[in-house]
Structures are given as C-alpha cells and as structure tokens.
Image (cartoon, rainbow over all chains, first blue to last red):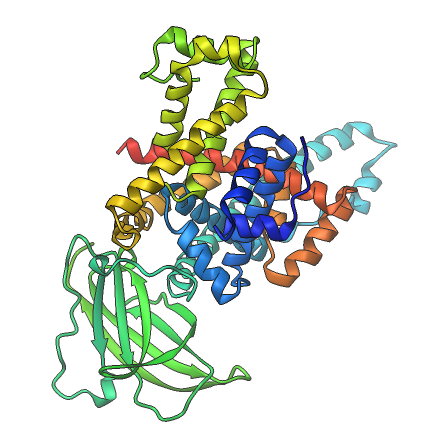
Length: 288
Length: 195
C-alpha cells in the first residue's frame, strides 16, 4: 500500500494548504498504512519544531496558527512539544559535570600484603567515607540543581510569554499598566495592579523617553526587599498612543504582594548596555 | 481498555472481532484507530475531534452485523469513509450556520493557557521522563537539546554514535515521543481532574 509522499506534499497537507483529493489520499494512507502514518507524524513533528524555532515563513506561520491554534488536541500537542524542548535545553545547560571516580591511592597499595588483616578494616573505612562523600555530593548537587532548575524555569516562562512566537493571551486575562520612568514622573499615576481573578498576565507598558535606538532591550525585575532578580532579554520598543514603550508580560502567578522595581536598559549590537530607566509598581493583592 | 458506554457490549465485541480475531491485538488496533481518527478530525479543524472519533466508531458499530459479511478489504478504510462523511457534514454545518471568524477561539486559548494546567504538564513531563529507561531519557533530552541549525548537526552526531541512520533516529524518537505525549496527557488529566 505504501505510496510515495513528498515532504512538500506532507507540509502542505499539515498546513491545510492542499486540495480535497490529495487530502483524502494522504488521510487514507495515514489510517491504513503504518509506514505512511509514521512519515506523516515525523513530518508533523518537524513542522511543529520549525514553528517553535521560528523557522517558518510568515505565510506558513499564519497557516500553522490557523491549523494548530484551533483544536484543543493541537494546542496540547504544541504545548507538550514546546515543554519537552525547553526541558531538554534547560537540562543540557544545567548538566552537572560528572565527578571523576577517585583513584586508588598509593596509601592503599602500601597497606596491601603483607598484612591483610589491616587491609580489610582500612578498606571498610575507606568505602564508608566514599559512600558518605558521594551521598553528600549528590544531595549538594541535587539542591543546587533544583535551585538552578527552578530559576531557569521561571526565566524560561518569562522568555516564552514575551516571545513574539507566543500566541497572545485573551484580552480578558490581561491587566495592562502604563508606567512612565520614575525620573520623569511628577505626581505618580496609580501604579497598582488591580486584583481580578480572571487575570493571568500583567502587561507592563514601560514608556521609553530616550532618543537613542537599541537593537534590543532588557529588563530586570525585583520585589523591594528581595534579593532575587529576574531578567528578560530580547525585548523591543514600539510606538503606542502614550508614546514609545517596551511591553513586558509577566504571568501574575509569579507576583507576590509588595512593591516591584523594574530597570529597563537598551542593549547595543555588540552587547553593551546603555543607560537605564527605572519604574515601579505595586501589587497590593496577597496572591492572584 | 475502557469500553465506550454508548455501544451495546455485543456490538463492541463484534467490532473488536472484526478488527482482529485475537482480542488483545484487536484492542490495540482499536486504540490506534481511534487515535488516527482523532488526528484526522483535528487536521480538518473539527471542533471536537474526540467526540467525532467516537461518533465514527458508533456509526460503524451500528452496521457491524452487515459489514462482517459484506465488506472486503482493510476495515480502517471503511472507518475512514465514515469519518470523511462526518467531516463533510461538519464543514457544511459550519458554512451554513457559523462563520469561521465567529468561532470562539478565546475559549480554547483560555483553556490551554491556563497556568495550573501548564504547571501540571511540566510536573507530568518530569514524572513520565523518569518512567523511561535511562537510555531513552538520554535520547529524548539529547534529541531536543538544540535548536535551529545546531540541531541538525547534533542529531546527525547522535545517529552516528548510535550506529543508525538519521531517519532511523527520527523514527525511534517519534515512537518515544508519542508514548511520552500519551503519558503526559494521561498524567495531566489525572492531576487536573483530581482537584
């Protein structure tokens, strides 16, 4: 039953850009021929990866979103693939370097015959020491690993929500706050995040008064009295009604009650950081 | 395997027997068939692919007595014929009654962007990865550890180290990923429905 399916045909099929006859032919192969089914699933995986890598042309991206942003099954598939990729990339970055196995020391060799009776307790002590050491090291590494992983997970979530490839949240779930820099603000407007159970994303519109243009912008966010600081890179300035602004999205579940400081800086092509602007806002709610 | 409640038990048994005389093999074929139908309905942008896959199975089960005698060929193609009719009915209904722009995409997005659901999936990914053998875990994490152009060279290197072709590596990964995705979905359903 195996028929030849070209990569182009499969991609057109997956993007919904194919005539009725070809669609039926491919679907029949998908349901009746295991080899073709596998090929189609692999082609779909490639397409999803190309979308997540930002490698699709604007037209293909539009077709992809029309096709894969529609059913819960496809949205779920998309999210799971994104999750697996992110997890794999984080794990690759955080991979703990293997501890080299301890080498047999010359001391041990000196204890070896002629006196075996001394050798056995010495080996036992050595083994206990090695086991205790390994357990301690693994706990220490696990603790460090989890800390790094948790932080990486938050920064990953922030990067993802601010990525241009991420579909925007429905307006009903977004709370927008326009923030002028602290330096130009007189009597400040209300910079409080209003509590609303439906809100899942806080969208900060950070007004950018500087004339100088940068290739990208970065922010650091921290809660007053906290030492922990989160960074979001790769942001861009855009023209809005209230002026030029950098838009930053923050999932509200990451926010705790308190005042927050935001520092926004331009980043040049060579990675140099330009002068920054400071902003503040407050989250009076205990939790979202 | 859970029997679908809409079907009388005898029809369900006959349906399984039509797929394969060995009940265990038939059960696997049934699940794979249902999965394929769900995918086909999703590709055709049907709003309820799961429900339509079940409707297809119901419609075929109602004719099973006759089909066993008269139908010759791959049963899956008969299921596809019924599914394709459902797709046409659905598309006709959409064109007649609901302009495509009016479909409430926001609801779907809201459901899928739910933060708790994302967190549950993340937790399930870790659980499901741990259920894989060490070798498979390394394969998944290695396969997806690079992006864009770097991933092409990296995967070629992985295939070389495993002594298999890049196509074989993709097939192997596809199987693992399908199983992993299935595990994540089941685990997430369990976590979110348990609340």
